[in-house]
Structures are given as C-alpha cells and as structure tokens.
Length: 280
Image 1 (cartoon, one colour):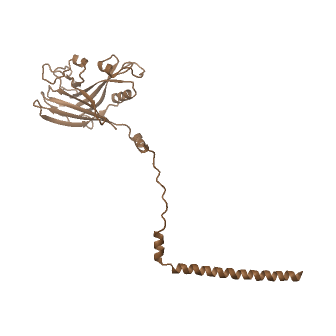
Image 2: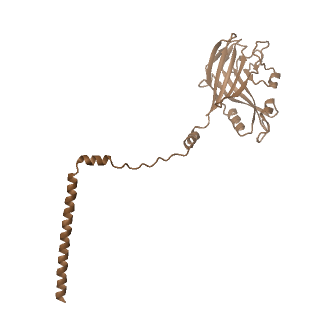
Image 3: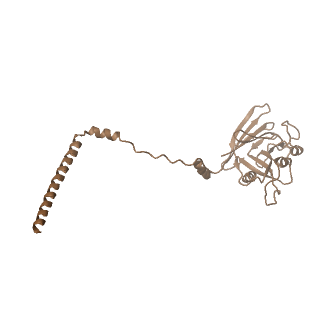
C-alpha cells in the first residue's frame, strides 16, 4: 500500500512539472509575438487606423412638436393691438400741407371691454367714429359747436345724417362739426382700416385723436348680466335702445411721452385721417 501511494505521488509530480514547462513556453512565445508585432507596426499605420475608424453613431435630435415653441412664446408675449394713424392736411388747392404718422394706445377700459365682448359673441358692433380736436380748447370744427367739440368723422348712417352730419366737405355757413365720410374695410393682411375726412373751420392745433365704437348689448348698457347677443350688426347699426359707446384707442401730443407733435391747421384746410388696426 505504501509503495503504490509513493508511485502515485511521483507520477503526479512529473505531470505537474511537465504542465508547468508547457505553460511557460506558451507564455514566452505569445509575449514575444505580441511585442514583435507592436514593434514592427509603424506610427503612420496607427494614425491611419485612428482616422479610418468607424465614427460613433449620432442619435437623431429630438424635435419638439410643431407649434410648441411658438405657443410658449405666445404665452409670454400676449396679444398686442396696434393702431397706426396717418393724418394728411391739405390746403384748399389740394396740395399737402402736412403728413403725420404715429401710433395710438388701446384704452384699458373701453378697448379691452369691447374686444372681450365682440370675440365672446356678447356684443354686436354698430358704428365707428374718428375724433380729433385740441384737447379742451377751441377745436378745428368749432363754429357750429357751443362746447368746442372735436371734429367728428362718422359713418353715413340715416341717424347721423338726420342729426346734421354732412357728407360733403364744402364750406357752408354754419359749418358742421360732424362729417359722414367714414369708411371701414378689412385688408387681405387682416388689417382693419378706418378712414374719413373733415373740413377745418377754425385755425388751431390738433392735440388729441381717438376712435370711438358704438355697440349693442343684449340687456342694455347698464343692466345685466350680459348674455350671448341676439342683436345683429345691421340692427345695431340702425340704432337700438340697448346701445353703448366706448373709446377704443386714443393718442395725445400732451401725454408722457407724447404720441405725436401738435399738428397746426388753418381754416379752409381739410384733414384726411386713416387708422389701421392690426393684431400680433
């Protein structure tokens, strides 16, 4: 038994020694081959290999849904109402004496109330008026007005013509302060345009301008609550008992800062006023 165990131990030792020799030979051979291959590869080949390496795939940029950016911007900027005025003063011979352009201001009470009522369907629009005057002093259309009111440019409705508004710019006596020459239109660019003319009968200065809107409410100007309107624009245009009026926009040469420089006018001249409303 002891002889067999001794023989087994000697054979195991021989096998382990042989395996160690084989492993050492393989390790030396592979190390030498690797070192040799690294030494033989020129530096230029390494640079070329780096340049020709396949590029790392780029993930496509994630696009925002259409309208997301503009919607976020719109929430920050709000809706703006732009009113661009042009005043052209002409002499009796038709020559242009002055050409003035400026921007107006939306009235925070009347203007915002009118827009809210119209877009919600609770108001029906009636007539528009353009006014320009001297701001409390003798106005440019004052010979027939005891209160020195501003020149009124109104739409040629039956009620305004019956009230003494003139559709003519001819010089007469007494000279009216109200002229039914106003037109309204919508441009292809969705710009709402008011335009009209008035005759100047008094030498003075234009310091204030405004636009005035007459509209109809379902329950009248002072009773409520307001409900969806059942009054058509045509019936409101003709005049109803439930009409109201608001200054929509205005501008002044005496505001801070002034919207425009005072405009001097002379008796016998005419003034053509154009107001362009746009939204952004």
